[in-house]
Image (cartoon, rainbow, N blue to C red):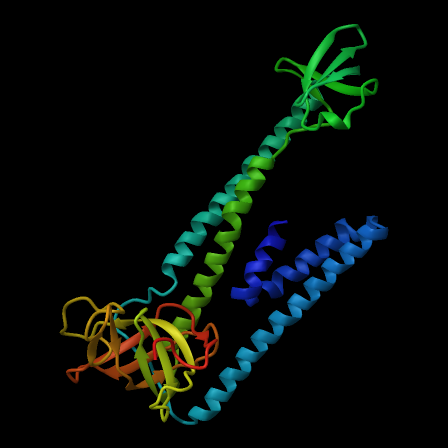
Amino acid sequence: MALAIGLLYWYVRLPEVVLVVAPVLAGIVVWGEVRSSGGAVLVANLGVLAALGLGWAAAWARLRGRRKQRLVLERVAGSGYRRWEPAGRLWRGAVLIGTGLVLVALAVGAVVVGLRAVAEDERAAALATRTEALVTGRTDLSLRVRAEDGRRLTVDALFPEDYRVGSTVTVLEDESGARLAAEPYDAFGEQLATLAAGLPGVSLLTAGLLARRRAAALRSRPVPALRVLERMDEEGRTWVYPADDTAERMPLFMCACAAEEPPGLEGPWESGEPGEFGDVRHDGSFLAVRLREAVMLGVPYEGGELALLAEEFDGQPVAIRTVAPVRAVRTPVAPGR
């Protein structure tokens, strides 16, 4: 169930995870469900397998499309390669990785606690006295039974409706009391904790590792360098256009960016500061930045990491880096234009 829920998110945001998880979930369905099912249940399970196969194929097609985007841009760049050498340490993805590791550790801890509780329950059941008893009545959360020696007992039951009055059940008795042998320790709480911490933990950890690897690739070797036009909108998003699209008709992509602080300058250099990305004009309640030329370092495929080199309004150079993956543009023109 956890993998199925996670796939709904990973299909959209992390197709790399789908390529690994979808076959695993398909194997679980085949091994645990298909082999022992029939009729309508078998049809439903086969439908699940078909959906997993289609999802895997869609994720593979997206990643293949990204690879084609990279190859096309590398051919366009030709010999125009530059090395990106920013000052300071690489922090991209650090917060995601740290948060993901904490959540994954919590999920692993919940699994360990659950397994220990189940093992302890099994040891206690092996040492308990087994008594056959007749069900004489039911409540919403318990059963009333009569043991072979005539004793009347009340035992907890998760699903009392599963036990008919007059049927025989096995009761385990020890120093802690009596319970039904058919209802061992329920690790639902630990399972829920694993689900709540594990899914976001795996997602954040994977996203952080991918972002860090892609950002590190900008530093480790020369990357394509292309001339583009860029501007920031009122929401702090950076829109990148072809070098000849001065009318801003067709943006190539959109990304969230922050500026690197050049040597010798002080003050905040975060995305959205007045005067950061070019000439600033007041337009109602927001600051709109005019279009300007820039050099794009890296390949702008979906989910990629980039750097932009441009000039400030006062002629000072500014280096802009992505702080979130590049996303394809869903509208024909940038918002607010």
